Amino acid sequence: MNYFSTAILSIIQGLTELLPISSSGHLLLASELINLKPSLPLLTLLHFPSAVAILIFYRGELIKTVQNLKLVDLGKFIIAIIPAGIVGVLAGDFIEEVFHMPQFIAFSLVLWGILMIFTEQKIKTRKKKQNSIPIVKKVSWKQALFIGTMQILALVPGTSRSGITTLAGVWTGLEKGIALDFSFIIGLPLLLGAFGFEFVKSGLDMDKNQAVLLMVLTFIVSYCALFLLNKMKRMNFLTIFGIYRIILSIGIISVLLF
Image (spheres, rainbow, N blue to C red):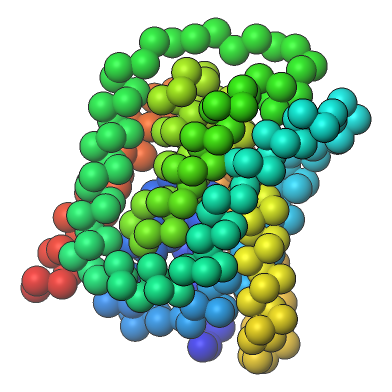
């Protein structure tokens, strides 16, 4: 890749990995418009700067969680992480290959976009308590298990990990801001695990200057995405991103047809 493609990839991956708008949908559109076709190993390696952004952005919450962590809380993290981790290792590549058809990605974008809009219209506004209780203590075992199980769907292109886990949290009764925060915290070990697994398997075979640019720019954009979502917590962000997903799907279909 040239430096222009590297910069575009960093921006797309940094934003779409964390915003609930599907990285695969945007990469598909970029591949058609500017012939940007990064390899799956390269995209997986970009999980690292996104994970670092989450670590820094949620450092206060993570420190608070560690300080107050009990065995029962650790169990909630584990059951929320294990399902997607196991399926990702055993069938991730198969799912990516089978469901990576443009038509399916477009359909997935619309489906979850509609569910985001519908969900936000149905939920009642709940006041978020401002206290020092770690997020994991606000999540029950049943909620953690359901969110973790639903996270498996994030392996399907066009879904969005942060989108499906936030929806799953809201469906179980969590306030959407708490569901969003919990989504990022349980996603952290998955991002780091995917990066470590792919790095050991494939390494990073590219120009060092481009690699540095890719990592640094992806981190900056990822952090900005987290900052944006934090500002949107009290807004109807599920509806906003749901509408965006539908528009993106229409754009993909239009580009493919014309």
